[in-house]
Image (tube, rainbow, N blue to C red; front, side, top):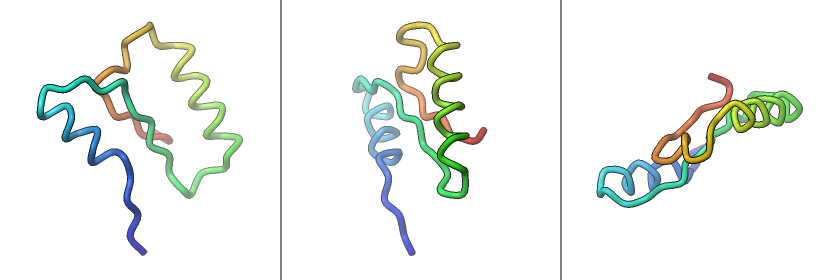
Length: 60
């Protein structure tokens, strides 16, 4: 099974020098409660704009 994600497009935008607000990619093998906790932690510990141009993977 092949999955298509927005990650590829996010990297393309960064390579082309375009703005990209940031992407959080989530593993399908993780409990949704864990994913929610990790996203909340990531966003609460980040300053405004800090995730721009980045792709973050959960779990990391």
